[in-house]
Length: 548
Image (cartoon, rainbow, N blue to C red; front, side):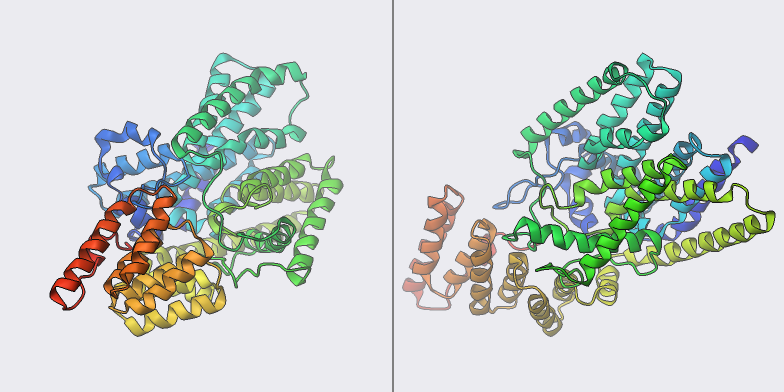
């Protein structure tokens, strides 16, 4: 039992930091991906999830471009066992988090003393930046991906030290495949193994290749299936901030985000569910944020050069952070986010390895008094981490709570105001919704989704003349939005602007969208009835897809 004490302590800290999420319901993306997702409610068809995209297909929008079948199957199992209640989902997240924290300790123990490895596991277990991944059910994808990659990394370290066996090769390859199927981030697993090189015994490249070959086969097979299912090699649709922005300015924006990452990893007192403009400012040149980001990168370079021999685990931790941030760095390709706390779940493993490695180096030759003072400081940090995590988790209780809190956390985020406006629509607070949409557009006027949402709100409240303007603005920014075009056809027909409605539908037909043939028939029918009865025009709204 004593041999398991560090693992039990680490797991206990993770539970203490996350148990307050158990009363939570479903919030934000949980609603569309779990509550309103028929695929999750059918456990008997679970194998079909491996042939479907992560986001459910929407008429006139199409399937998503993400592929996470293992995570969706996990949701289906939890839905069936828990009969759709959120408690089981959150319990699985909490227990999964504790397991990942123990795996962090286990990996650290391969290179550090038991006490310093426990420090790494404990800091990971109470880190407040993890709340989003744990308290929001869809964050399970982060948990499973990190868990599989940590298990694979531990097996890889053991194989390098004790020799490769068929069992170890198979385990490492299986962990890689499972990580990829849980979330696309799993694809970077070979880079994490590369980051471990400074702390592993040297072996000939031929021996390394014997392990890397199965990983290459897994990567090719996964990529082929993913491409066949999603129809694209790329990921999700780029964030509106990246559309039309030249690469140098995207890189400068992300340089500013580096300091945000550093702050969230080192001192995550202030947290937010959203980091959209103008909480993060899209760079048009060098500024204070870029200077701060450059300073962080300079400090990372200093740590790498200073401790590459004294504490090589520091270099490994920094390499782990760099590799796991690469998919969301928006450098190789623009992603659907600028920054998000959930994306720091895996990088934080590297961060705690760096802290533990430096702590072990610092402790060498220190007096007993200095060690006790440091120990007291660590205890204070752990208590603060538990407190911040425990008080943050209830923010994710439901969408209404989350949206209201996000306005306080990120008052200059246009997306926070857009989400709040949507909640006001559901609450039938028309004036508040209209004001929130207007302010969101004032903050950032290049996202067609906000115009589309505002148009659907105006349409719902009987103001099709206002809705038409919003739909036209959305299509001006993103001409390919077929759902927006369909809604525009409906409003134009309601206003008896039949020629314009017909022109929009015909333009879509020329693009090959045959769904608009039905809308053309409905426009003609509405016009005929209007001429016949000379009464209130018949709206198309009931037969057109509405905004969820």
